[in-house]
Length: 214
Image (cartoon, rainbow, N blue to C red):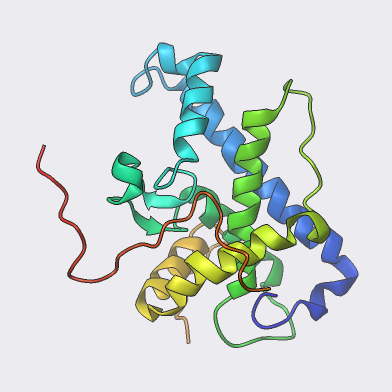
């Protein structure tokens, strides 16, 4: 799935897939904890349980913070930029890069499957925090059977869009490397399922709609 194949992870495939889900859950929890402690930039109202729930709902709208590096949910997310470059997706992709660091087997190309799986893991993580009944409730397993369709949806939409723009891919990978546990800067040498509810095609040309002045 990533770099053209997942066969070399077969002995530890469960742990590898579980790592995507765990990293996504931790990323969302870290942001919730940060907001609860931020008395400067987050209002008392937004630090309440209802405030956190509002943030979760806003983050998962089209153009929201869950998936976009420059989020903006106005007008169905038309002004949001950098899809799949949210810190949540980048942290999960950073986990993947850590997991293959030093691998004997190398596969050329961009980790298409890993990015799609990272997006799916982040979507599932936000859903868990929105839908859980108590803080002790565990998230559902991030199994291939339960999440294959969602992963393919992201592969066929947002990831496919990025594949048409190599420069954007390079920027995304550089950002993801920054989330690796031991980051070392280096030079980079099913269809018809529809789309996730959080996906919107991002304009990437000079014809992008102009952001109205405040």
